[in-house]
Length: 452
Image (cartoon, rainbow, N blue to C red):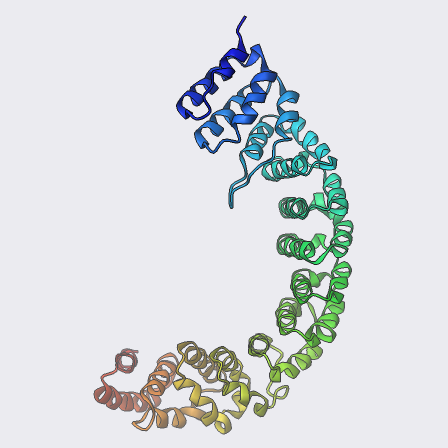
């Protein structure tokens, strides 16, 4: 009879070559004394030697079928050390074993979630987390919810939340019956845990918005923490179409008046997602306009961008004077967003031309580009005749080179569709400007119009 103890006693733990060789030998002798060999392996697996750990993992997987309960019951107790990205060796081993026999292993892992030992619960959770993508049908939601409700370990709650998030995104039907319970659990958590949960909930909302009840999310708008309120408002942007009128009312009357600008900004974004589901947009437009004087640039920029995308917005909604401060903002992002809204003033273009033309020579390329697009949109709507003289005046030597470039780009996109009289007039001036400046943009416009 083989003396396993004698073999083990001769191991020199400091000589990794011998250690690796003996480990391989013990793997071949597994059936002679699996209990003793496993105990030895569970000592070796803690060594900082990756090839050795991988060899032990391989042996345990190979011998799992002969002694399943022995391996699982002993492996699950070992404290694991996860890397920043990868799971620890214990979890990796349990996951690989689970892939061989998910129908049997996953229920066992779920049963371990009520164990009093933190290491056992964490190993079980990490292993379930690694198996969820392939074997979601074997995972019961209820034990995970119970853990979330009762467990005091923050790491365990974080992993459990991640598991439920993955389940909801992969197969929303599995989580839908439990969403109200899940949300009730979240709202009762301490702040750090609640933040983790809310992030998971946002991912669920993006992938499976139909399973999240709108009314339950509204409760989070009362939270004292601005991050929780912000995330809740973002979630409403994805799910609010299920209850558009109530959601819009909450976003306008509570979120848009929140003390924290990050919440107000999120509210603007969420309203933008929901607005197409609301027939009467007047109330939303009115509230958004009131934010054009918000103290935060990000909020004003978001509002301007959203207003520019609402077809129903007219110049009568926003007197031009209300837009002026944003057109002259020191923040280029606000100026860019303002430029996207000037097309609504097409009927006033002759009166406001000089004030909006400054955007065409803005120091920021994005502002100039959006301004050019708006001018093109105005011309397509009302024709070029009303502003042709103004454009050509600013194309003359009195305008800055950047202004001349922007106007030439506007002309290149609009004049080619005009009659020959207008084309000749524009080409004549462009020829002069090209010869004097030798600017490639102006000269390219000249050539393009000649060829058109």
